[in-house]
Image (cartoon, rainbow, N blue to C red; front, side):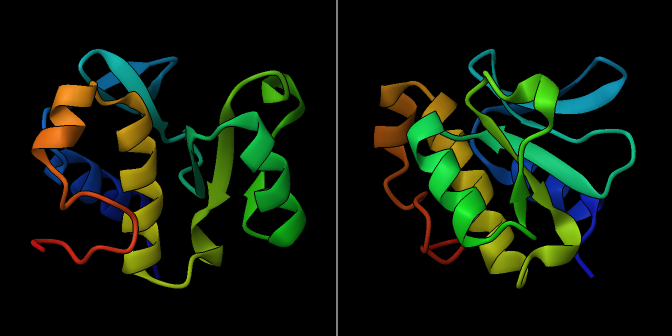
Length: 121
């Protein structure tokens, strides 16, 4: 089963990612921008997601993606760890969020980091 430790391991493998505690939970940042949070129950994590895409994700897979009421106005979506199909899907979700937060120069330096690419490609 995929765990919060897998989220941490993959996040910290992404370029210039640092872990910082905020709101009593681990957060992961690139160039000072947060792109992952792991709430303290560690059954889900939150990632950046444009609002127009978020509604589609939730409609397509409501057992996997959700937004708590207090985050409805944000550009974040929660992902249930138990609903993920494997580490490749987890990596794709984390890489997508990383690319949204990373400065253009960093994303350009790492064209191999894109959803669907195998780690080390």
